[in-house]
Length: 183
Image 1 (cartoon, rainbow, N blue to C red):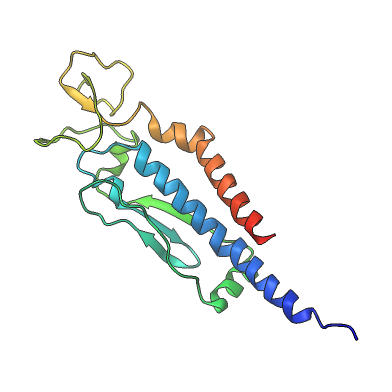
Image 2 (image 1 turned 90 degrees about the vertical axis):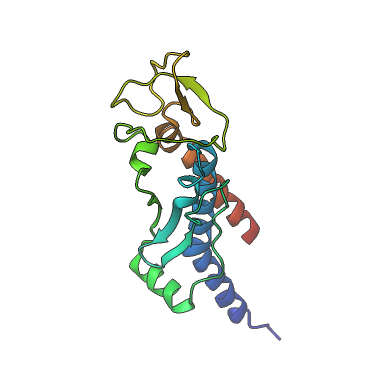
């Protein structure tokens, strides 16, 4: 007598659909956030701990502490409701965003000129000394090594990671690892 394998197939399809629409993008977002925390500037740790992960379809799914200190990894707990996964699959799109909501985040990624603020504590990350002219961006190439300014992240750390291929590699590697576990 033949065994009915349809229930097993349906269960497998459910696992794969959740993996494609939620698990793989969520884990890739965690990996990217870890990299952003490590590569970015870290004076008090406020910037590093102000990243959060949200999904247009699933809502806010992981956030940092928003507190000073060394970076605390952002982890997404649990799985979404089955009905939500079905909605996302039916929409044909699963979009996840990684955002930093600290007020100076645009300065920290060198998107706008840096505005110096008084600072009287030792940074949480190793620094490089130099001089930055007023209105200059953090990490400028023309740092005078003898200047009073310090930086805790490499020059253009954000665009190098985001557009330089490392972010894409983190995403692809995470997806591949998750899909390999399904086999």
